[in-house]
Length: 218
Image (cartoon, rainbow, N blue to C red):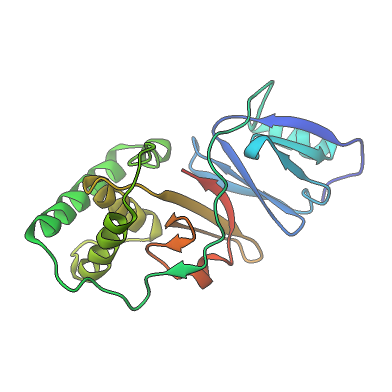
């Protein structure tokens, strides 16, 4: 538990992301591919500069963050539009038909994801398909439905991170992009990720992902 003391305002290092769940502070270190939790550290927390700066932290919390290399001497506000609360999903919907080119794209997407998983660090994996571009919503939803239709037949499955990577690559091959959202919750601790466009969840249930506090969006 954090001790009382003068509140501090600090900048986060670029590879550090945080989320508040109740009074607990959860930290994601992308470079280390690791989460850690500081119980009761977020009692007076204020997140500023779009997640780049924290204020209201007790001195011992600042010391703990500095010790693990989570802080920077200075920084700038992080870019990115505010994420909408997920309210829709594609549950129960499938593509009426699948083109051969789409099947081929999914196979290639799975192969690319396997290679990236084995050869790249998390910070490189999450950068895939994240370039800003104008996305045709109809194309994006079509691709997501095709993915939902074909994915159960994939010989390679995996946890949420791998599935999201495959779908993001598949969307990129169709000229579409979306947000990759990472979320956490505590007691018990759980981390999850999903793809989202606006308020539409592409590969999960909106009701389920709303239980998580977003910690990083790429």
